[in-house]
Structure formats: structure tokens, C-alpha cells
Length: 146
Image 1 (cartoon, rainbow, N blue to C red):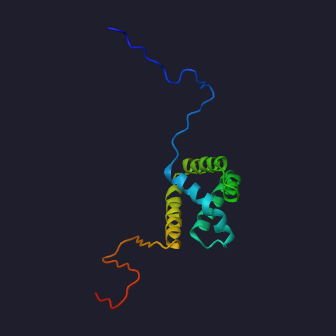
Image 2: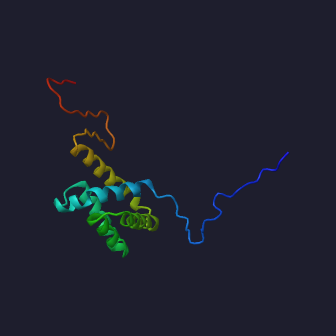
Image 3: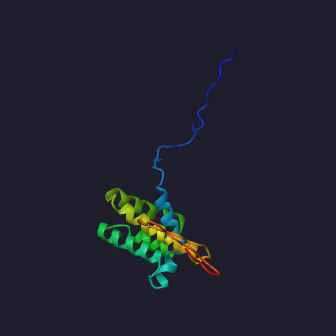
């Protein structure tokens, strides 16, 4: 019986400068991608949109934290892979320093996502809170009775 030789698939690669990074948070990636796509548009249109509120929230947090503002501006004005990665790192750092920001960021992201879907012809039904009965409808033609 012949001995099986095991080969390391990474042999021959210089890994001395490689730094392991944790997998990025899905919320952070979604926010960065959305700001790269819609951030500039939100700022130009006057700031009443959910994307503008998301942008302002991050601006305020970065200013209070003392860093990250440049990354946010870079993504909004000229989003490239480097700028997106830097903004993702800055947002992740904010969430690490102050975990209580996450619920607010999630709520702002939810609003921006819903606004984006609604503006492209989608139907968005959202309800928060408590109620005995909730009715949500769109495009009703004819009588409605309950």
C-alpha cells in the first residue's frame, strides 16, 4: 500500500502581510451599498428622504466620534471599492464603540429600503406597534365594508 502525500494548498504563497478581518456585518454592507448608490441623490434632492436621514445620522455620529466623515463623503461623491471598504470599517467601528446605535441604524435602513422599493413602483406595507386590527390596502376599486 502506497502512502498518500498531503499537499498544503497555500504553500508557495506569501501570507506574512495577510491580516484576517472578521466577516462584515450584513447591515453595514447594506447601508454602505445603498449610500454609494443613492447617497448623492439624497443629498442633492434636499434631505427629506429616508436616505438623507440615514446620511445625516451617520454624519452626526461620525462628527461626535471624531472620525469617519471623510469616508462617508467619499462614498457619496465617488464610490469605489476602497471608499466602500473604509466606510464599512468606520460604521462597524461606530457600532462597536456604541452598540446602542444599531437599533437606530436598523430603523433608518428599513425606512430607506422601503422608500427605495416604493419609489420604483413597489408596494410597501409596514406596521409597528400594537393594535387589535390593522388594515392596509392599495388600489381599491369599488366599495369596502368591514
